[in-house]
Every structure is written in C-alpha cells, then in structure tokens.
Length: 381
Image (tube, rainbow, N blue to C red; front, side, top):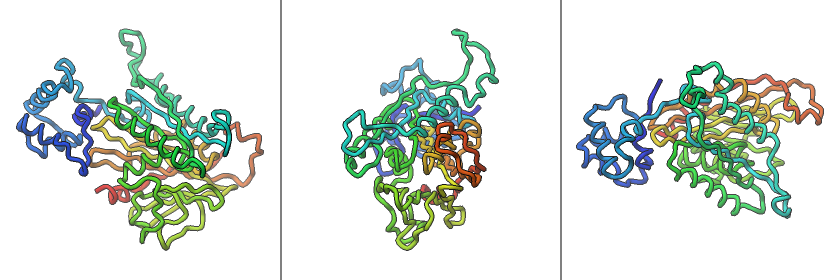
C-alpha cells in the first residue's frame, strides 16, 4: 500500500512556476522548514517526513483555518491506487463529460444527441468503477458497520455535457467547455474528470491536453518548423473529408513541411522520430487513452475515445476486458503521473452488415501501445 502527501490539495496550491502565490514562503516562515523541503512536500516528492516537521505543518494548517485539529494528520495522507480501476474508484467525485451534437438550425433540445458509441463507453466505465473491473467480489469481504464490503468507490458521480465542434457554434462551444473545465479545476475534493470521445466531438479534451502540456487550446500547430517542436507528443491526423476543428492535437500536418497522407494517430517515439497507427474504413482503426494524475492535488484528468465511432465501440470492449494494460502510467515526475496509450485495431477483411453495428461485437486484432515516457518528459522537464 502506498500513500501520497496531500498538502497542496488542502492549501489549494497549484505548483505552477508562472504563479507565485507565496505559499512556500508563508510555510517556511511559520514552520522553519527548508524551502526546498516545503516545495517537495507540495509536489508529493518526498520519501519521508520527520515527525517534528509534520507537527509544525499541522500547526500551520490549524492556525490558518485550513482544517481542524481532529482531522490531522490523517487529512494529509491518501492511499494511492495500485491499478487502473483503483485510480478512478478512489476519487471522491467522478465527472464524465460527453460531447453533444446538434443538427444545423435544429431547435433545442430536440435536435441534439449523444453518439451511441460514447454512451457504450460510458457504460463500461461506470461498470468498471463500481465493480473495480469485476474484481470487487474477489476482494476481502470484511464488513464495516453497515455490513458492506470495504472497497473504494466514489461518493459522487456526475455527468456534464458540452457542445461538439461545429461551424456555427465555435464561441458557444468554447465557452461551455471552459466553464465545465474551470468548475472542475476549482473544486477542492479528490476528483476525476473523464472526457469521452476525441477533440472532434468533445471540446473539454482540448483543455485537458493544453493544460497538461502548457500550450494554447484550439490553436493548430501545423506551422512549427519540425514535428519535435509540437507541444504534445501525439496528434490526430484528420480525414480530409471530415470537419477539422482547430486543435493543439488535431490537424492534417505534423509541421510546416510534414504532411502525412493517411488519417490516424501519430506519436513521437523514444528516439524523436514519429510513428503512426492509421485508419482504414475496411481494415484498421485506432483509439487513444490518456490521463494525468496530480497526486498532491487529488486531481485526475482523463480522456479516451476512438478515431471513429467504430473504434470507440472497440475501446469499450478493451476497457471491460484489458483495462489493467493501461497501468502503470508511462511517465512520473514533478508531482504528476501520465498515462498515454494508443490502441490499434486490425480487422478481418469481411465487412459487418450495418444492422450489426448496435451489437458492438466486432472482432479485431488489438494492440495497446504505451507512448514514450521520454517523448513526454522532453515537453515537461
């Protein structure tokens, strides 16, 4: 069992070098602790803490009204997850965000809808969170005072909706996505935000990525001189005939001089070159799973979805049967953990009848590809 130190969460401190709210200075002056030690505590990067230092921190928190004495020192510690489903189930609040599409000129709410594959994926996630991926029954059944199994589970499940990108609602779409994301960031509980879909259907995903890699949201990076200069180590290469919303991780060019021909997901490898898993209407599809866990803040941001509705359906099956392969995170450092995985599907040449779409029973050769920790580190360190 591993524990994380939640000082930053209690203080509402975000370790952002661009913002210096004076948190470290105030703690140092009150407790007499070393400045570097306080910074490490705020980032959950210390391996041990002397009891004297812990006592002074508790005094600081009580005197400044952050917590009451009877909550300490327990409030400073939290059990860390040991697998993918625990990562979600140990959050007090889990919010799932879906993109809503609407027909041009249609009256609301009758002309708006959710995509079937996103709904299927959400169902598998809810099932996995509530049953720990089907393993809850195998865990200890030692009962508590309410005679229920002792296992982690969220106290609150919430659903939020944002507009999918469209030509006639850009301002409304961005305003709504910012409102949902900022409300999540500003809340103080141990929480998770899960965006379902891709930047083609869910604009909150754009904010999760841009915040992680410190770049401008809704700004295409096709003009960088080289793909290595992209802020994010992966990109969705849109199909030429589909809507192409402005995005920091979407477009048709990797750089000013590099334009890949095939649609799909492109990603930087350990040696700095770019690889890809491409989309083909008959034979191949891809999906992406990404999460960033800020342990010290008790904040998890995640998105997952397919390049197409077919891939999202396939991802729902993978989540239900192989979620353990999305753990552990591929990168850990500076107080955050990042998981980033491309899921590749190769289909048999036979085509499914259209009526089989709702059965969600396609078969495919499936590979789960962890993205390079070095490619991520080059953008964060």
